[in-house]
Image 1 (cartoon, rainbow, N blue to C red):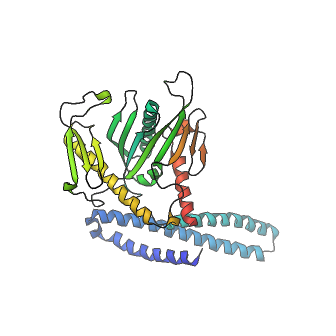
Image 2: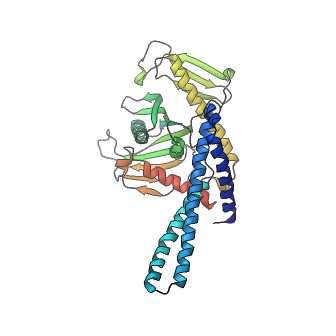
Image 3: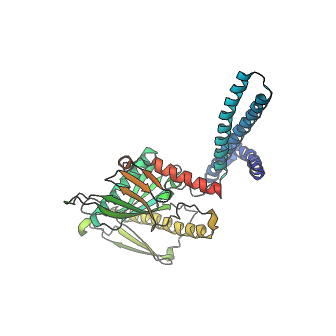
Length: 357
């Protein structure tokens, strides 16, 4: 490995010793937030230290076998040592790659819970039905990982789809898995309403927002305009007879959030504020990303929701992610929540780009 990487590992091992003392301090857990941060740091540094130990052990064994190959007179023993060398070098190569990935600076947002906003785009009813399909796909993927889903707002259509659905996902490493889903998702299939059997193309936009915590973003009450009114469902029918629907306008930015799913005005207001905070936090993060050097940006996309990222072709059972040239012929499984292969391919691509830079 490069000398600067070895120096970096030595620095991190010194930090690990400091963190181990903090973990052993009973006073640490008086501050729960700091305790969580320290425990996360401890887990990351321990992983780096363990990988470094394995790499050093593999290097020692390689050196011993190389010496054995040079000095051994017995041909059979020499052949065995050469075979083991091949295995050890492969093991060392994999461990070094694992170590380099662990050394990448962690994204501070990766541990965040997430708010997803799915909106039907071009394609009318078919787009709204696909928005419903995407929601179900993410919900089942979340369920398989033990994450918790909470619907914050829906705008249903009469055909059973969604013009818009906003929901939160809470759990471990949610944002790190879902952050690459922002963009335009295109679907090609024969709609159930199509009598001629023609394939239609529709589009749905997905926005993935890290959910802001209380300390992440502050909203002044005087910057909010809050309106209440009676909620309505598909086709305009009244859902209830009280002014429970809430519309919050953030005056400085013009952002507007509407929540009307709950019968309680207070619950709708609380949900609307969560969405508003997430959108404002995402705007701040976008500014921060724009200030970073261009060569440190991920090559798989900026998260721009206007970017076409993926095509779901149902007649061919094909999913194509256009950012990394990934094509899988298992759309029937993916749309039912088996999204792991796609997510891991995107995460791996990002790591490789960061390593190469």
